[in-house]
Image (cartoon, rainbow, N blue to C red):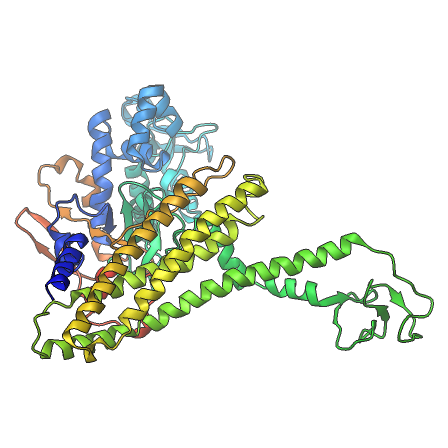
Length: 588
């Protein structure tokens, strides 16, 4: 018994806190999540954070700073690098920013009227507007121009009407002129400017939840990552589809299309039917005779597909001979059959692990019942977090294993990388990957077996044995997942010369949950609050049709307001999927 106890504690030490995964994870010093959730309320603060950096550095107004940032897709670092490489004048001209000191039009004209070069009419000097580029037109022409551009969806960069002028019109002028005639359109213009931080920003994307939760996600580091919104949805930030690593975005897109469309039906038709030489409809052979008759009445030879008469014997068809070997037709049929078999091999295993995951998710309630029974027994073992942690590890490893089959289908096929590797190199890399895949598969199945054991009926020694097996297999599967990702990133995708495929990094604790971006109440920034004042109704509007937002606000000790959401107490079985995060399962 003492030796068992020594193994027990040595196994515990080797895990380095696996059993209390969530508690220990919170105690470790860290910089926080690398992704932020931007709600409707925090969108303005997130946008003005970047605006202030540009305004302070270049001493610009908010309008000019926003024009520069929209041109550079809200990439502040890229904007600063262009400033250093090309200079301020080139930076401004490429973005359409014109900073010209000019006097008011009423003071610069001797007469009380000005001729508009658009409508060619004499207009009162107080009914014309002059932009930063010094072009001056009547308010009516400007308004019509702005209305057309806003309705066309070009609110973010409305250019001057003058011929070959690339200057961007002043936001305040647009807002004042349009709101006088169409207040609703002016509000849409404000909303478009605000949402340009999401629509034009490569580091920010809308959460693809349906129905839409109204949130956006901003990543701080690598855009090739998988994130989780506060609404609970996990998705690939790069392509906005469900999380799919270790598949690249292109691989997953092709795989989904292949599984959904009728491409494999076409392959089956190619393998098992022949086209009628008259009506060109596919005909399936249902007998032993090689003289086949189509529903259109045309008889043809099954061996070669050539049209024939109906006179035939068991050995030959009258007036027809096709004994010569035709290599092309045989090769096409052979290749179609081989491709179909290869696809079915990978698809069957992908679906088998997906189905296993769905069945294993039902273990949650069973595990809780077993733990409740064990807790009522008088035993030295009081902590049963190893069961739930092992279950979470099973979920994550099963997901990785499931998506590894679509990856292997394209990595070692002819669709994407036929020019990247020789046949010998492909075989070596395929054997290397399949060995790791096989090891992971074997240990995942072992972990699943031990978790499903009726350990609530076992003696204390039996429970201890199951515990050690679950803990050890949890560590092993996690290590094998890491090694598989390293193999993919370094040995397989990293060695490509012509194509670039990126995958989201592996994370032992699952997909990272984004933290909400706090809205700080900075009272010292009154000089940049004009946009907030002009958009005082933005919090009372819906950002976009069909994008609701809910939540309540509270002030913390730092003077920042934080937005809190009500948490769901339970999740139904129908909400489980391959991408269920660990921390969400911990709260079930």
